[in-house]
Length: 351
View 1 (cartoon, rainbow, N blue to C red):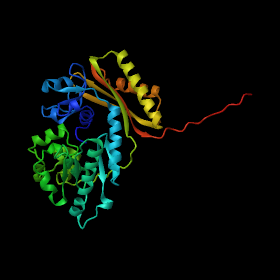
View 2 (view 1 turned 120 degrees about the vertical axis):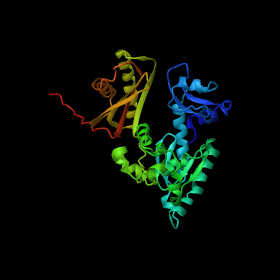
View 3 (view 1 turned 90 degrees about the horizontal axis):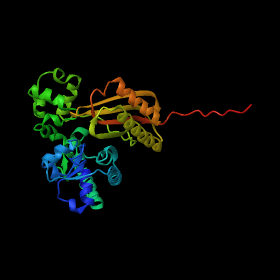
View 4 (view 1 turned 120 degrees about the horizontal axis):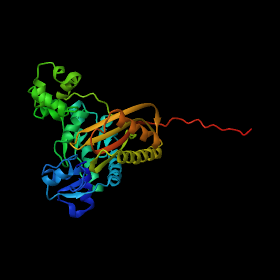
């Protein structure tokens, strides 16, 4: 979906159409940008940017408080439209999914099969626009890596096809940082080695392991458009989390414990409503300089009780000495979800 949160706000509030909409905390408060309309992106505003920075970059920006329940509801409706295509679907976030059209796009070769996906993609885009008043950008290719890159090419409202015979040429001019798994650290290491574009990576004759370690051989395959990651059609939610950004940085243990306790209750309620439990509990902190750290513990038996989740959160904070200076944000999350451990119910007879 294109600028999903901001697009929903612009659709629901006509006065915001064509305006630089920034979904997130206002610049006068502590917080970050959740999403920005394309009008705001023209000023350099991006998601995860501090709201105060966004306010400086885009003085005319209209800040709107996020309405996550509304966006989740819209996501469910959009994904129902997508499901009508008959494709197998891996939903990866509230506004993004991979579709497998292999079963009904069978051509004489890979390129013809991919072209058979174009009418399906156009129908999905038209249906979303007609029924929801929103635009989506779609990429068509033989694997996740290329489909994702294609979907980003002509936003908003884009449709891009990368056929197998042209994938290497398509990748050559792109910055190496667009490849899956290449973060800031890896990108810097590659740039220092003279590798700035995917074409540079394709032409590199040395051992990539000397630059990127065990990721080197995988990175080399990505540079030529090869990606064997399978789609995951398990639609169950993989994780649940809750975060709080403080108005002022704090290291006050009473405030931090109270915040964690509230988050634990929220997570436990969510787990119990879904009838699942979690084997992994994680705590996230962000300091005043925006450094973010996450630490987690994985258990043998799943948990779903607020008291246990809270206790594990406190344990992780203490064990890793995370409160060594005031925190800007603290978060608690659970993942590795599955059925709760069976409870043995005992009955005692009075003697």
